[in-house]
Image (cartoon, rainbow, N blue to C red; front, side, top):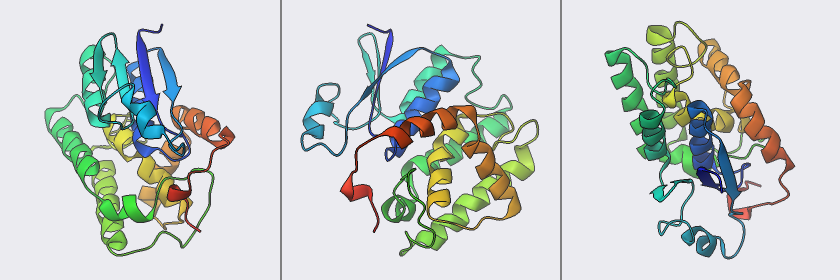
Length: 218
């Protein structure tokens, strides 16, 4: 059995799984992926085999379970201190943690009305109450990071960091639902979409046979 296992949901739909998976890629660890189809009638039962929270992702390292994306990031940052999860500069690091926590707990409209769906192109769909406010705040975060602390790379704090892992699923949502972005934000979104790690995940997602009706918009 592999030293690390990562329990994930469907790669086409599961934004939280994408975050946990990207964190393992940044850590540079070999991980066995265990995919639970979130469209299966008994998916909760399957997930409870790994964690009583019955959610994805779950990182298993020996006898240790870590069952939250941000907690997985922090754990992997501790055991892979040279992986660059957080910016080296203290103020940038605090900023990165703040926006990552905001992403973790906020933006309910985007989550509700724009479910992640890598197979679809649905420009103009996914609109609802609070969407415009969420989009304004997210793009404000992206612009601020790129303008103030984005030197040395194409991502929020220059090189890829945990903050990019947290916002990567939003990039996919904006692409799927045709959200128009200013040039700076579009450049950032393109950098995420074209990154090798994301391309690897996307290629697997596009091969999946499953459809989860709850995550589809007509």
